Amino acid sequence: MKKPIFLTGLALFFGFNAALFAQAPSAQSSVDTLQKLSCAEPTEVFSQALLTDSANLLAGFALPASSELSAAAASAPVKLHQQNFQAAFKKLDERQLNRVKAFTAAELAAPAGVAADAPLYYPFSGPDLLYAEAFFPNARRYLLTGLEPVGAMPLLASYQPEELAGSLADMRKSLHAILNFSFFKTNDMRVDFRGSRLKGVVPVLLTFAAKAGFEVLNINFFYVNTDGSVCRTDASALTAIKSPQIPGVELTLRRSGSATSQELIYLSADIGDAGLAKAPQYMALVQKLGHGATFIKSASFLLHKPYFSKVRELILDTSPRILQDDSGVPYTQFAAANWQPVFYGTYVKPIPMFGSHNQPKLTEAFKALGSKPLEFGIGYRHSKRDSSLLLFNKTPVL
Image (cartoon, rainbow, N blue to C red; front, side, top):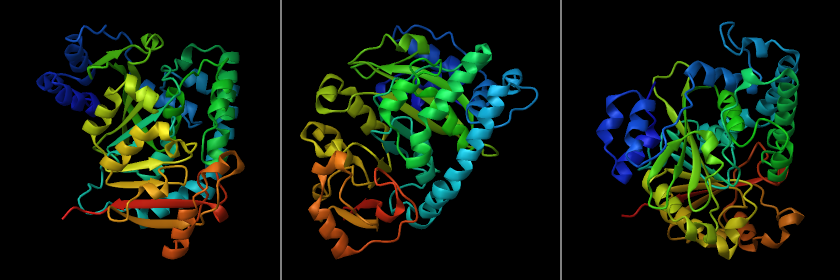
């Protein structure tokens, strides 16, 4: 099993003995090193086959006959789930993702000085690997952040038939908005999973990993202390983790037939100014891990508010390029001397819920600079006729 890039990177960043990470298989070497921080040793170990099969079952894909989940996969609730998700994914591909991928190929080549596989930073994402991967398929690391709890690895073979049926139905209901409108309804996720065994973001991350064609090689649950030290732990222990510690999960992913892996990290953190004042290790972590692009979509216009100034400054200071809808960094924050904008689609004032965040200067910029066609809807204005995307490339320092 490949060693997790994220935890190895943190070993270098925070001064752990990196040699220990290179000597043994990933799970053991990571545990051995992190035990030096007086962390409890994780007891949960999941095979690559179980991780991948669980992701495929959740996503409605067929499993091999040899899978330890084959009995569950043969049940009527799973067959119904497969039919529903296969139909939903087909519509999503035709309406959205195939067009997003064409846009990516035509418009999102990495600018000079940025590696083609540079990491992606996606704040306010929730568990949206779906669009992160569609826009940035080659990123070697996806760093996602949301308020939703991490959750746990779903042990699907242990579910009773009625539990499995209910949990998969909850999954379909909770993902309805992002599959149809391109964004999560956070309150729906909380309500839909309240009585389900599929809690937190892990089941959704697994589902979208399978949808993107990934095998799941490894999963690590961890938390980040205020001094920056990182402790691996069991998922059950994360429920007791409170601010200022930051709980998270790391998945190691690989496309079938590929020789290289990609990392997915999700951090459950409040990144408003008050939250970051309590947990400054979040800012340090993002900066040290580095990224070649920031992606912002359906972010409730939080970056327009004065009490999200720290993460807004972090994005502007550290991002070589930013792809966002109008709910991201306000247009007036992009100094003309520092950023080269490219606009796509049609900018229309925000939906009534966010009507106070209209951007007249952005309207003027669209008229002055023009925009390229956008063949799909994105964000809160999810119809392609009134959707827009904004791409900002940082001007190179000469």
